[in-house]
Image (cartoon, rainbow, N blue to C red):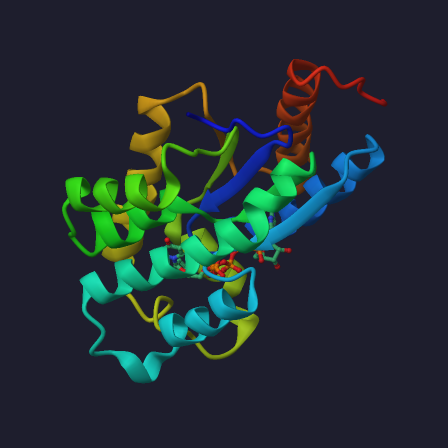
Length: 218
Ligand code: Z5A
């Protein structure tokens, strides 16, 4: 079961500073122009309980958090997010766009923290029951360039304190996942000027709309 609901589910992934938040806004307004009812959200987060879990996950006072705890908290937040927000919206025919989803658990907790793929898959199957996004954008950018873009942002959170090789593993994991299921992923060179990035995003959104039987307004 991919997504049996009338609405479509789109996720955005990538390493830090790759442009997820920037493109989330672009996608939201592009879909709204097409007359689609859109819900934008993020992970970890998206509901009051999941946002409270996010605070724990990002808090750098909790440096002793084990990778297993981190993974379980990600999926605890995700379970609430799915049941309370994502699934009801999709059932109502809305399209949901999320800044990160389960691919991030494979990339961060799997590839970078070293948790076994099979363990993540087990929890994913339990929480999601075969539910997947219709489309996942992977914004791919060198780690150096991403760091430059976010440098001005102030204090680092618990993830942002990791070293370059951690983020290189995350980046490779996203690219590998995209290679394994090219029908679900759209990899975008996020080092291009924003206008080029958004042309590619728009092209892919048009395809998804047409496949969903929606007319595309130019
Ligand atoms: N995490 C996890 O470990 N496991 C999980 O299952 C999940 C998450 C769901 C929170 O993520 C952390 O949770 C994350 C992974 C972990 N940790 N890390 N790292 P988050 O998504 O909230 O935070 P983030 O990854 O740090 O996102 P970000 O740094 O905010 O990056 P972004 O949203 O991709 O970038 P942006 O804000 O859109 O753009 C950054 C700047 O670049 C901004 O000034 C833009 O104007 C500029 N920009 C954007 N695009 C361009 C282009 N094309 N050219 C030039 N400048 C650009």
